[in-house]
Image (cartoon, rainbow, N blue to C red; front, side, top):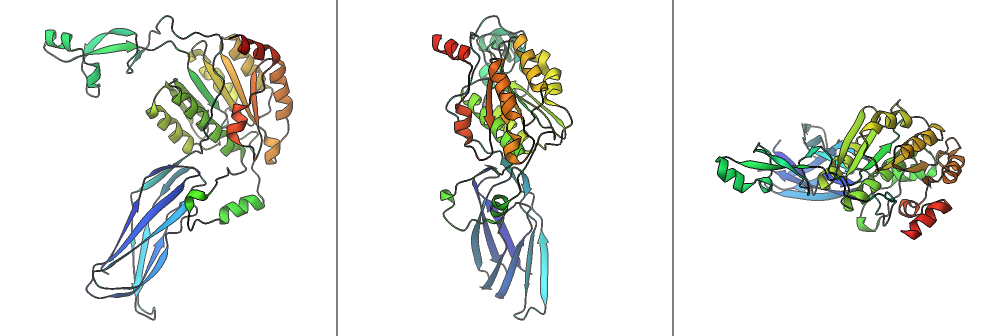
Length: 384
């Protein structure tokens, strides 16, 4: 056939709400011109418009084009396969071939920038070192050991290495600063999604030009709102150089131990990108399974669309164990689901628990920065 197609993407990792750009280069390697070449893009990325029909490509010439797609759905998408067809001017004799592609696009959840969010009150950083080894460099040295493949060169203790005539690295213990844990309710109970004109309009939109001017809106789904909230909070605390852990039970149990740094943020976003809300484990059971491993003084963020009273019991148990629960209620009623989030919010406020209630269509950044605190907690914050 003598036709070669090359697909190039600027990056294979992007965020929901961003615009994906892919560049196609079609090369006619034959000496003879091609009257027409049909490029059929069979990738499973929603909104992808990479298919084209190109005409009059001379021998040993090339043609290129780009397409843009607004990323509305998280997940991993295959960029291919690509079917190439060509033939005579009347289309009586055609030749086709399918080109496979190994490229995958990872679309991470939508993130909003948060200026402020609750942190532990009255818990001072520092204190006794935790007797847990870590690969991070902390002020708490635990000893030395022999160098192993994968160890950072920065951790080598050169005086000891020179004395023992072999590479020796330093070990450290974890900083006792309180951790941040995000528990995302990935069960099917309480989840809701609106299907209407707004959803149909979102599915039908295409990106033709000026992608930087587009404004993204989350799909009207408690699932996507909850995942976006979890991603935004993780991003906020990682930027604050805090240790952040994630726990969710969807189609499988996902537990990421609390760590800090960009690498940890990448792991959290990837886990949330592939998370399916198909779990049968309740949020209360998920917290009960992990509560013994949580450090006293930690902030525990509970994100749920359920209005079950078990959430109240879970928050009280966390308080009794010396932790700060922060409850984020995704109001299922505003997504066409069951009511009860407003009543649950008032219960938490009366008990002195920090609570947020997120409604459909609400600006997430503003909603997460505006906390309804009981009067006693307001007074406590002002006195600090």
